[in-house]
Length: 188
Image (cartoon, rainbow, N blue to C red; front, top):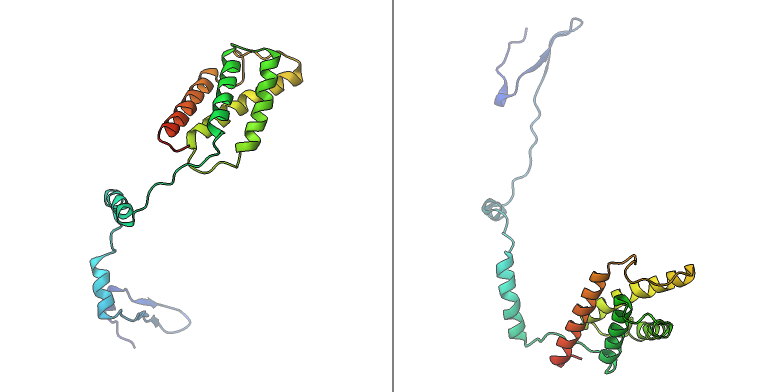
């Protein structure tokens, strides 16, 4: 008869009884994994290398730019870009505000905005920024609303549009301010 043994390493004995056969004992299986070399273990014990924090990264960027002599990219746009964009801003404002809703002004706006869009849609360099983006956003919304009203045979009413009138006026002002700022800085 087999004698009961104490479980090894805290693992309970897996002894079962079977009425048909004698007691069967299962032995525990040890999984042996190779140990890492001493140098690798030492680096793992220290823990992972912490990622640099945002403050240290921000402090290093200007120093790197100064050391390399890099300068921010200057905006490049055709010489007539400023005047054409200011004209689109003025026409868009006159329609949004309702100061000039004559057919001639609306037709002029539609014709000039199409030319402006074709000239500057993808033909301006990066860096002209918010002046282009805000003007494009407002003129596109007003132009679309005018075309929808024309298709329906309804007059355009600046007080009852699908777009927020105050917001459109605000982004046109921001676009104009951004362009004026860039022109004053010699970037256009």
